[in-house]
Image (cartoon, rainbow, N blue to C red):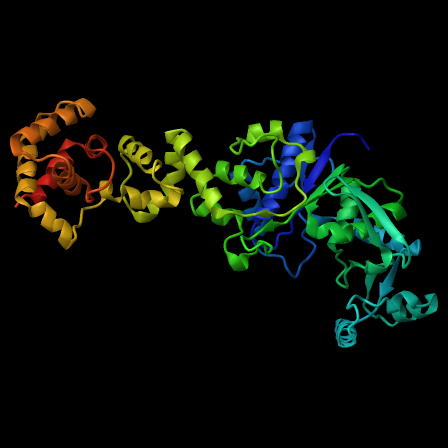
Length: 477
C-alpha cells in the first residue's frame, strides 16, 4: 500500500449528522488537504435495525452545505469502492471465517434470551455483565452438532485472556489495556451482517486508510481492532482519538439537552462558515490565540499535534458571537441569499432586491442568526402598529408640528443622504423648536414604529420618501 495519507469519515445512517460527527469529518478534511492526501466518505450501513430512511441523503447534503468535499465515496466513486458497507458483506464474511479458522474467533449460539438472563444473573451477583465466553469452550464436535441442527449463531472475537496490549495514540501517547477487561466482541450478527468492529478493520485495510480519526468513545474498542490487524498480518493505521464535546454542565453533548444536529444549527440561521470555525476549535487549538478562521485558513493552520486531550464545552453563546462576526463581514449579496428562505417563510415581498440588500445591511449589524432577520426587518415590510403609550407620543402637539413640517419639506429632498436629512432636521428644529428626543423619537416612531432603531437617513433611504410620507400622513391628527 502506498504511503499516501488517507483518512475516512465513516458515519452510520441512523439519523442526523451529529456535530461530533461533523467535527470528525472536518478534521479528516483538514488533515487530508494539509498533507495532499485523500478524504474518504464510507457509509457504515450494516446495522439494518437502526437504519433511517433518507439519512444518507441528509448526511451528504449536510457535508455539502458546510463545504466539506470528499475525494472518494458515494456519488463520487473511487478505486476502493463500493463505499456502502451493505454492499461489501461477502468480504466481511470471508474475513470472519478466516479468523475462525485461525482460532481467533468462534461461533456463539447463545440466544438473545440466554444473553439477557446471563447479564441479569451477573448483575445480581455484582459481577461484570460482559459476555462470559461460554461458547468459546465448545468443542469442534459440539459446534458441528449445533450447526447441523440449524442453530443460529453469531461470530465472536476470541481475545486473549491474559497479559496486556499496548498501543500509541497521536493525541494520548502510550495506552495500555489489560486483556481481561476486553470482551469477546460480536463480529458477525445472526442476520449475517457485520458489526462496526470487523467491518471497519477490514475496510480501513482494504481502502488503505493511514490514519483513523474518531471519538474517544472508541478508545476501549481499539485493542480488539489491533488484535484483528495482528491476526490478519496487516499494518494498523495511526490512531487519533478525539476528546468529547461537552454540555456546559460537562456531561456528554446529547440531544436530550438541546440541538446537536448539523442541519438544526443551519436551519436556525447559523452560517456554515461560523459553524465550521466554531467546531474546529472544539478539540483543536491554533499556535496563537486567534479564533476566527476561514476553511482555507484552517487547512493551513491545522496540525494533529495541536489536538486536545480534554473535552471541550459547546458554548452556544460563543457560536452566536462567531456567527454575528460572519454576518457582519461576509458579502452582502451572499448574506441576502442565505437569509432569503427565512423571509419567504413570513410571506413578505422581497422582490425589490436593492431594497432587500439594504435591509440585510441593517439587520446583520443587529442579529446573531439569520433567523432573527425577518423580525428586525418587519418595520420595513409591514404596516406599523402603535401601543397606547406610543399613540400618546404621536399625539403630542410638538410631535404633530414636526410631522406636518416634514410632510411639507420631505418631498423637496432630491437625494437621501446624511447631509440632506441633517439639513432637514436642523430646519425642523428652527421651525418647531423640537430637538433631541422631542425630535428624533416621534419621527422614528412615525416612520419606523419604534423610538429606537437605525439612523433616520437609513430608514428613509430604505423605505423611500413616498412610503415615509404615507406613514407620516397616517399619524397626523
